[in-house]
Image 1 (cartoon, rainbow, N blue to C red):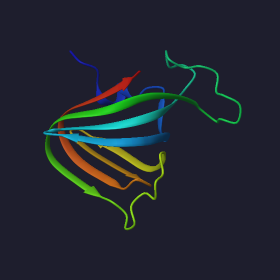
Image 2 (image 1 turned 120 degrees about the horizontal axis):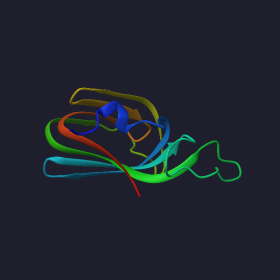
Image 3 (image 1 turned 30 degrees about the vertical axis):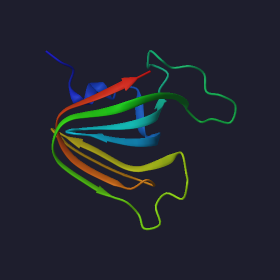
Length: 116
């Protein structure tokens, strides 16, 4: 049996993490992330000077998407490369996130958390 959705996010503080990019491919969406890891995470390292978190690259991968809504702010992201996350929710197969990049709402068959 696979891991529950909640357990996949253990020791990852999504709201302190940073969105780096969004890739859409057929029925799959990948969010490229810089995850903020808690000390109990296996990939945790001491934060760099001036960092409040141990930032570690990774991604959120959604497959089998049946519903997808992307809402981008007017004027776009203005060339930014890192986008703060202000709100994050997963309930069953539904996912919603608000960030400086924009708002993402979707329903997917699978949700995976991957660290590099």
